[in-house]
Image (cartoon, rainbow, N blue to C red):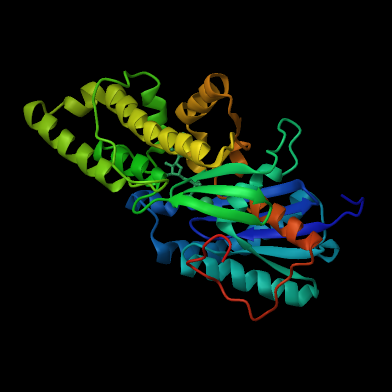
Length: 342
Ligand code: KG4
Ligand code: ZN
């Protein structure tokens, strides 16, 4: 890499987090995230409210990112933004803001695919971590996505499998909701699971061929299980919270690990790099560490702030594209459905 300092402002607004980051080459100088608390009371993201909150947040969040990085907007080399996939009303806010700012400052505009960004977040400069080398298997596990990708180079990715229905984060959140836990329930399941017996209850694993996933059946089987048990004992959930959480988490982790194992067998690649909000789960981190010693895998998990939705990961893609002069023009439009490599 050359010694030139390129400052990239990145903007992320695909779902319910408004985020802006400033990078100097591969180093993140600031990464500001405004999480929209309003959705909590609805138990999930409400698209219209998300879009409105992005409109309110975007200017202060960008200001804060520039201030924290101590960079004046005149020093910026380019503006990167999430074009998709995501919620259209949310994407539109970041896209139009990025376009206007790039036009006003007369600097290049760079569009970024959010799913590529989750994977390329591993290349953000981090003193405590080394990035994976190519080729590797990327697995993005979040509230919106579940995907296994073969990554041959920065921009040479092939989706090997993805969910046919719910994302893995939704499986955590919906199971938690059935147990009466608040949204998002994933972190709570993780917390209670540590205190429970993972073999206390058995839930069926879906039979999905190849590297695709399905999580909607698991939610249904948990619903029926809880209905059956609470008919016998109305306090069943509160009396068995830790064991239920441990068993639900165990089932979800078994599904993820089986698919990863199949991906390793199919590709011969033993480098696994995960990302997305569910990568925060202590259980999956434990299972990956186990796979390192038992199966000789090399596993990678980015710093937590680069796992959940954030503009830092958009900025690293922005920088990589900037180096290749991959710019876009003002005719660009947000793209709610935007497959990797399309
Ligand atoms: O990446 P993210 O912040 O947003 C999306 O793009 O969806 O992921 C949020 C998801 C939620 O479903 C949340 O419950 C889940 O990540 N999550 C967890 C944990 N921390 C966050 N799931 C299980 N265990 C955790 N520790
Ligand atoms: Zn995401």
